[in-house]
Image (cartoon, rainbow, N blue to C red; front, side):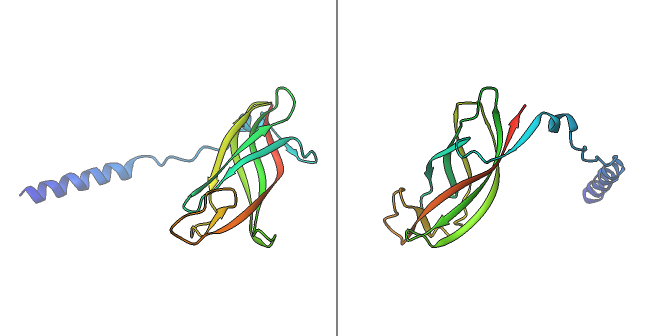
Amino acid sequence: MNRLICLLIALTSLGAYAALPKLKRPKADVTAEAVMDSIPLPRTDAVRFSGYEKENRSTRETFFVTNNLGADSTLTAIEVTFTYSTMDGRQLHQRTELIHCLIPSGETRALSIPTWDTNHSFHYYLSTPPRQRRSTPFRITSTPLRLILLK
């Protein structure tokens, strides 16, 4: 008897759930897009990357970004290409990321992205190498491609 009651309650609940109106994903907010501005980067001094860190076991890569643009230029995203290479300059990997942030003019923020090294076989050459496992040091270069600013 209890099973029958539970089954009837479950079916009633399922029917009520199915009768709910389908929620649609809202369209992109045009006003939010209108207050953004994208700048390609001929200037190499517009942003500065520093303090990169990635140890062997890390699942994220962390670094600092400084916004060197003029007053009232708040940085909301950076498109950047990262190139990873061995100590003798052989390329290991390259990727382009769009990194969302909020960096007012003249200020610095710590940012992080998921690591490219999912097997935990590499470490940044200035990071502490692991004691227990073999790890290959690497260097990184960052090339900003585009800045997205808050107008």
